[in-house]
Length: 219
Length: 180
Image (cartoon, rainbow over all chains, first blue to last red; front, side):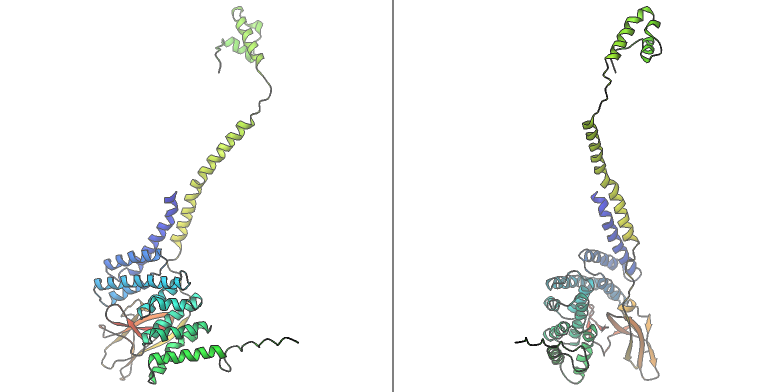
């Protein structure tokens, strides 16, 4: 009976492995394909995304990187996926593969598990948090230190602004940097502006006006 | 069924085919004994509800015991078919954004773009040189999300985009990052 019920799981695992093999066919060496299949099947069983592993294997092969070095990079990604997933769980988000992949990217860019947890604790929904993690990673890649990076992305996430506002942050930081400001100063300045806007509402002509204060009680 | 083994003529007597008088004299005593035994049989209706209930309950238990064995393979096969036949990766429905890539490389003979959006294929996305300026460009429509890429100069040199943020690629080089 148990064997019968395990059949779908076995097939799922085979399909996962088959999917990986299919995507890697002709692109990577057999030993790297085998390693990706092994790491990918294990990652998938833990609810982790496998796309970062597949992409890194293809990238390594395309760049002519020796298989041993590709294998090291793949194992590092598998660890970072675990770290990102654990950090998100600690922040209250359970099992979202896109958010985990975005968290893995943020770690690659220089952020830590605790930075990811801090963003998850803003209470943003999974989709917004995924964008926030990608943007936080991009800001880190621009040289914004983690404290200012997480401060800026957190305040923007908490403000409830649409994802497009988050996506504009790297361009804003870059334009400030072009004027000679350091990445840290640029991010801190933008975070202060976003916090002030959250307190006082959007500038005239933007967003919905705050609700009227309640009328004073009648004597 | 019984210890008696009656003569065939006596059996005919019991079946009502002949009468006692039709029997030969030496069989009449046996015939009379057979009729006496037959008359002694209790002919009232017999009801055995307990037996019936126990038998039916036993059959039901057996059915219940075997039902999972009959259903489990069917369910397992159905689940396996669903898993096997569904697409491995759902088609992407992410919105698309048009992006222009630019690299200034006056000495390059050819420049292409490789990244997560084209499976890192260095031949898939060539850039076009604009006149003699040394400016190479390509315009792509990419799905919303995050992409990593690099320019490939003269098919051998992987160069990050100088105008974009970059991260370690894990192989000692840098990948440019595009977040849409």
